[in-house]
Length: 186
Image (cartoon, rainbow, N blue to C red; front, side, top):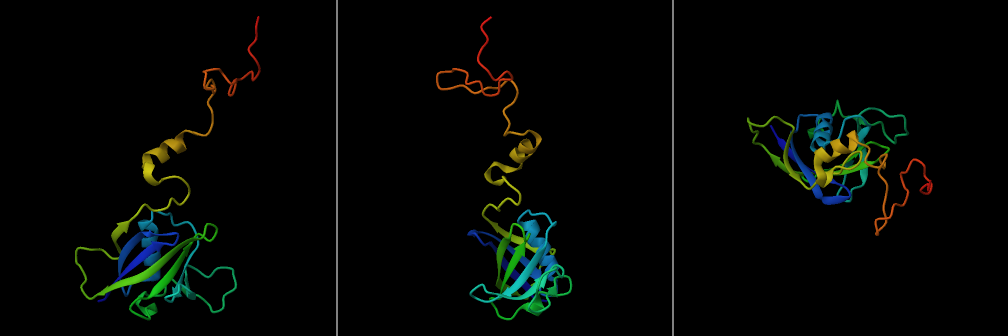
């Protein structure tokens, strides 16, 4: 059984990529799900693959479902299309589009074909990860998940009650005061 290794580049930065090994008999739906896991994205949005050439031009579409849009040719469905059936050359390329509003685009390139199936690996499998994945909905990156939890729990953009701002000399600028006016002299 052939094992295909794909390198999935984040389109905006080729130093960020994930390598996924998958059996040629598995479906595009499984590749779609493993790409989302590898980049820590949720599975809530529309997605599609396009068969591609060396110039990254979009060819035949392999879609999660048939969407309400105009097609030149009806799309193949990820759940019905095996990966091996769409491999046309040894360096086969696909373009993977996720979340049509945000247009996350990944370049998928076949980098290795092996006849050796490992009994220790459950396919599809993430076999290599390079670079920090983009955050699907906002900040993540270098600060990690702990900061994102704090950020969600506390609205860090609001100035809390009783917290004002001071200028360089320590003078109160009045920002955040409830009265909002000058100091009363009584």
